[in-house]
Image (cartoon, rainbow, N blue to C red; front, side):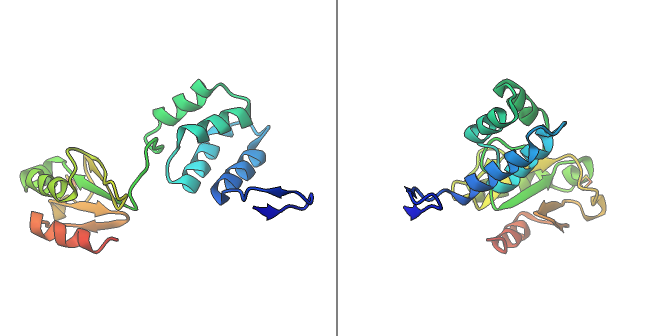
Length: 164
Ligand code: FES
């Protein structure tokens, strides 16, 4: 508990909640606010929890279904927690013929994932993409903003160790 300017003691507010409330206040009454506000909220929380979308709906005076619909329509929004490191393994044609499948399988196994998704410790999120634009380096993957190419399963696992 901490003293407030009103002299009362309130529970200390979560800084993320405060940032969300501040962002909502900034966008109230602004046309076309929903997408930029969802982007800001995702930056704050790393993803869009249901309660956050509810608060945004209340703040902008929109039905929850509208907010949820937009959040699920655009691939840029994530409704589940994301890992600190996002791995994108290319499964495009050039990478496929050069061994993307065994590469992907060894990463999945090492991370204990059945499919794409996020590890329990939130260290990694694994995704596949159709092409990274680095076909000359096939098979390739990106980790966050870094491109890694000419990978073997063993090399890929070595690379991943560098990302905490
Ligand atoms: S097909 Fe993999 S980078 Fe283009």
